[in-house]
Image (cartoon, rainbow, N blue to C red; front, side, top):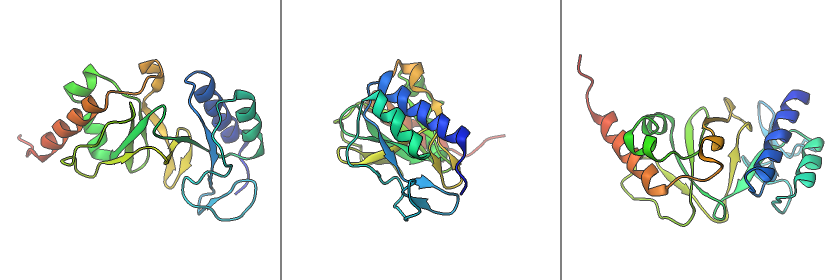
Length: 189
């Protein structure tokens, strides 16, 4: 894949914003080429959302220089600044339309098949949430505008809307529970 200067610039700016404005640690991740993930600075194959450098950083100058090398995915470690609740797309979008979510917003990124809610770390995931996964300490999650299979991540609810503060995990889980119940209801015409 030919490097796209505009994409690299968007990824670099986003990575710098996450470190500077939010104080989040960031690490460059594997690059989606349109057919496979690579390490970005080489054509060597890599896993999906695999860090290509060993340590996350909050240093804006370092982040700025790293994204000059390649259009890396923007990855963040979970478990410190936030955890992530990842759910199937339909459930996640439905959850953002519920009362519990509207009363207590959480940043939410959208991919072609999932919604990822950034929530305060350290809370367990309720076992009754269909298709929900909790990404916690030791895992890396992609942040917008990282390219993925089928498109690119975007913010459904921007962290700017929450002043860069992760959401309440219990409110997000309540919203998911309500959305799951709503989705099970038959449509009436």
